[in-house]
Amino acid sequence: MNKYLKIALFGFLLWLVPFLTGFLFVDMEGNFTVDEIFFKSIMIIVGSFTSVVLAINYFKDVKKDYVKEGTVVGVIWLIINLGIDLFFVSSGFFQMTVVEYFTDIGIRYLAIPIYTIGIGFILKNRK
Image (cartoon, rainbow, N blue to C red):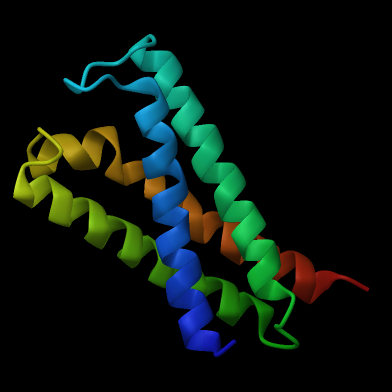
């Protein structure tokens, strides 16, 4: 698979998996079926797990410049995830302001480049 297609596809999947998982915990009216804090914890775990699995699969084809690759892919995935979410915020699907979005959800996406850059450093320093 083309490197750039892979980055884009994995970035979209990184957004899609937690998004679809969230529907398991929300009723048809948009109300949580579980405690909101528990829901947020589950979403962090699902997002983190998905990030790491996709990053591991991405790095299987990387042979050099691991930190650079981790930085690039992490920032692109961050932009993809924020971009899709901001589309939903601006369209009214997520019933919150942009400021509420960033303080409640968006800031968590900063973990994405942390994972990918961290994997890049691990691969660079392995012996």
